[in-house]
Image 1 (cartoon, rainbow, N blue to C red):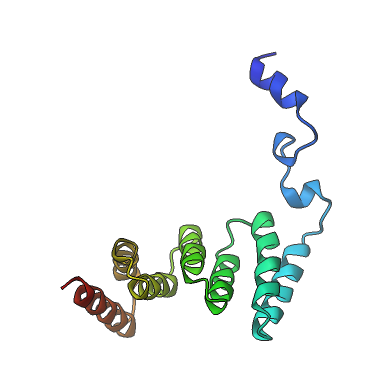
Image 2 (image 1 turned 180 degrees about the vertical axis):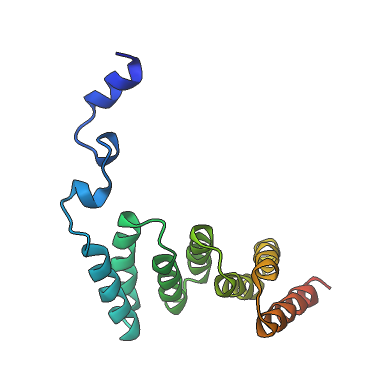
Length: 151
């Protein structure tokens, strides 16, 4: 037995050392993430941003690659006035799944927060992901805003 195997065997029953995800480790049903998302969405729609954020924080642990979780979390953080944290959540969503709307939201927020490098990355992504004339117009307007801040 090598040193890594000995180390892993010495650890307590941790999900990642036993080849399970967190939901399996805690005995959660497959429906749990759906229930948590529905609760978070209800809290968001009712204006309970903090409750929404707390629920989504739990869901992000169970499903870290779900872009909808990160987008809604960013929206809640934005409503709470935590714009830089919102930007980070949206960037995480973009890492999970590249979508034009997310890129445009990141670019718009980064421009407003005067973060030109982060805005530039989002603008490049948005330019690559645009598929309609409306999206092309939106990305061009954002590029003009970004450029105006640089001159």
